[in-house]
Length: 539
Image 1 (cartoon, rainbow, N blue to C red):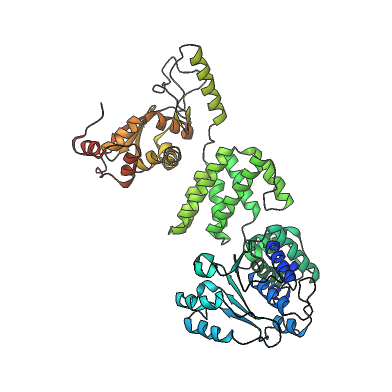
Image 2 (spheres, rainbow, N blue to C red; image 1 turned 60 degrees about the vertical axis):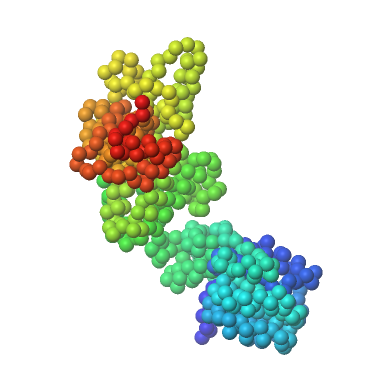
């Protein structure tokens, strides 16, 4: 019975051109071998599983190979076979995490004096070199700067920022990149063909994405699904084997959003927990899902989307259903939910509340329509007097249009084409955090200042805003037009915001948010003290 060998070892590259996704490194090294311009020390940095140690072994083999061909080892001579099998006295692989002390490095300094036994070079490969102690690095410096002619150092690390500059300056540095999805898929497909395995392209894409840029991780996942599924592997079996949330669930979310089906949202959360899916993995996938829709809408292409052709077409279709403003809002909201769930003691309750809120979100106003209206008003103002009452939604990122108080429905000058929407206190309270989020996005200092406010009542078209101190009251009064415009953008309702002191909560001292807000407006500390102590207001 033959001994089983994992894919990452069995199919480890034996020639430089077999290294996946690192042509910028392998081409340079082969040219150095051809021209005899080898450095005495190299530093390979990059994420895990992208070929750093493999490339180091190939370089060690080619410089000691008895019959190299086109700057590649022949893998047949005694030296190559000994290095491949890990029994060469001329190539030593050292784990930096286990041999990180100064004594180990001093022993290495003594060993480098001896000439190689068979090959031309004694090669020292130190993996995870950043784990060496400061004293060990200092002990290595002199040897690294002026090593014997027969010594070649190759360092590998996943955390280049932890390597001292004195070491970096003595090495030729090569940065290995994350491997692309298509390159990983091509590698796995060639392995599957050689192993006589039947695996469809959608399944390979799923395995490749699971690797997250690491070929070794993708190959380990490949071994796992083959062990479970046998010689025939399908997309559905991989979903079950790896317990991955399928794309169909994410498209169900977009259907819920377009239909505003809150009951379906709660049923979906129930299904997720019944199936035992990880909440954070679901949210990460949902964030990518809306990102894909955004890419399809903005570029008019699906080339940047990592999905099968079937799902790429569905993303192109879904892009027609959403505006870019809505897609950006969804992504920001899901990102904040993902961060909150990480620290929540009840992730299910948080997911239910936020998914219901996501599904019930109002569509964002058409910015193009607002800008067109502003242009129309500018043209009218250039021709003569114009009604100064501007729709509350006419607010841009640069600030509000010059306008008087928004008209009420009883005002005969109110445009008859824009009927007033009634709004309830319950609706305002349920979406107050969303409203404050939009305020923060437009005016971050103002949004931070109003974090502790709340809606304490709605009377007709007047929304009473409960404040904990006088500064919040005066800030809302000064910025009423901006806040009213943002309120309309979120709730699609014309209201007047009335700030009042909240009698049910004690007045709070000035917070850091208030301090930063006052600093942003350039308010003098004396003025701040007069406001706080005497209730002063500017004339």
